[in-house]
Amino acid sequence: MDVRKRGRRRTAQPPTPADERGIVGFEVLPFLVLVFMVGTLMFAQSWAVLDAKSATTAAARQAARTFVEQSG
Image (cartoon, rainbow, N blue to C red; front, side):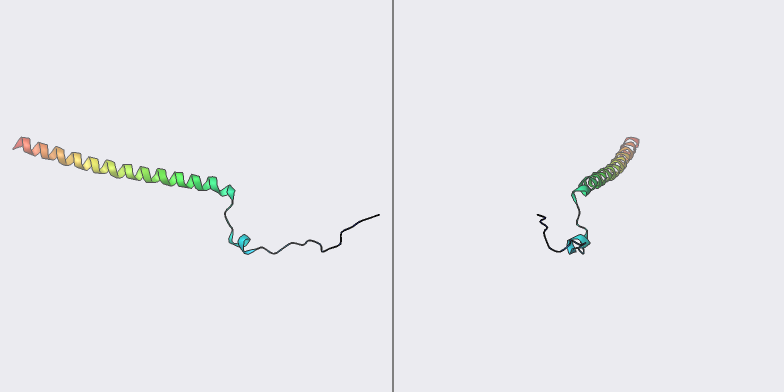
């Protein structure tokens, strides 16, 4: 006895709205972590440059003040 289920054939379904929006999957998380880390490192480097510039300016000002006070 041959038993076959009768019903519709499965066909390709149109994309759902969630598929069209392109919801981020799990495989993108390492990339996002990498982007966050690079951004943090760039921010820290910029902060260090500004801090060094500020310290250099303050040291030059103090050296000039000391030189003028000793000369006078």
